[in-house]
Image 1: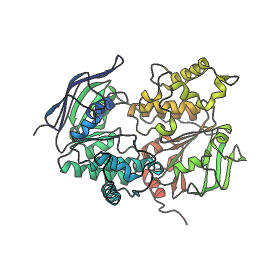
Image 2: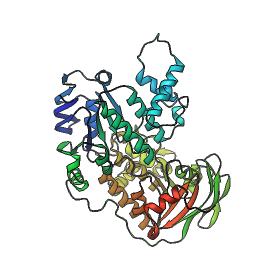
Image 3: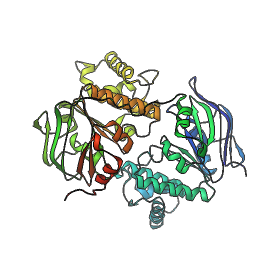
Image 4: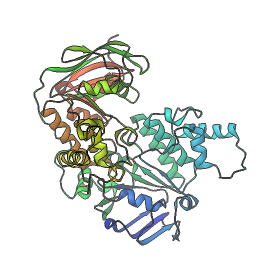
Length: 499
């Protein structure tokens, strides 16, 4: 049986920069073929060639055993190719059902819309992927995991023969991941081939048949997953042994900088939260999806001000009624969804870095571009942002480098407290280690760090203490020495918690 998808010696360059060099890749019917590599390795370029967003400069593309020469996204859909991108691309002002219909219903200006059938089809597809989402809900009201599940439902509904999944589990809970794996197995049982891109290497033995690694735009090799260890994959991806993904820097916490006492916000679903974070300490915030961690961060940063309880800064009660008030008090917040709230993709890196400190780079109300560029270059050098020039749009950077730019913006405010919401979500293992090192360095310099992460190994390895949330409140705080996966999960599920 011929491959569903076959790329032979495919090359692609952008402005003299070689993104792919003679890369070959194939996908068999009923197979999950994983694609791994660091950010910038060429994975996204390869995906965009398969989906018709880019045309290769050299090499050939075959789909279903037929040579493809005139390729674009519409043609790819006709060839039976569907893609689930890491960053959902839903229309925010349309409903869930309407977003799904755009991908599934035939175009035409005089076509009659059958609303009941549209909603029923959306409800059926959402149920297939285990999503409890109202088809009439506006897409803008969905959380990141919910948006991702809608994108997966769209791909399932296209009856595609080739499904490309780019970091599909990056923002999903463990339960949602299990549901996704079931969907993938159902697809492959019907002969569908799945290209599975993931930085979560521990997932691959559970879902993938083969794995291909790219490095610096070149093919490193293709192996059977059953014959490949995690250490093998890391060596293939980075070309060296990665000694420590979680380089925890031991620090001695100082005074309490930020404290919440019985903090509550009805609009955010947060109630009776009490916790504190010290100078030089990393306080991990753990819990299942929906536990209220991001909502608590929004309360502390003034996005949804508290309506009960109190916040103390350096032992003194403060009122944080807006993000501007939080910044003025020395609190910074790097949000979870970096592409919507962390960086402005169309703006240069320099403008992104200095957005929160415009007065610092202005003279008499006018922006001093030389000062802006100098400040951005200093942070790019310090944080190791890989960019040819700080005048480049932030959207051209890899996910890990975008995250560093988002971090630089708030470090430029000289904060005393920094809240990091999923700082390594969707970045490769090398960039993850770099960001962990930066977090450790920040704590070592005396910053109070609140680290929100859905990856339990990350929270356990990086935190000095861990506050666990369930149902919008803190169910327990564990010292580093007593924190285990089992104990954190007990608290996250509210088991063994006194009434």
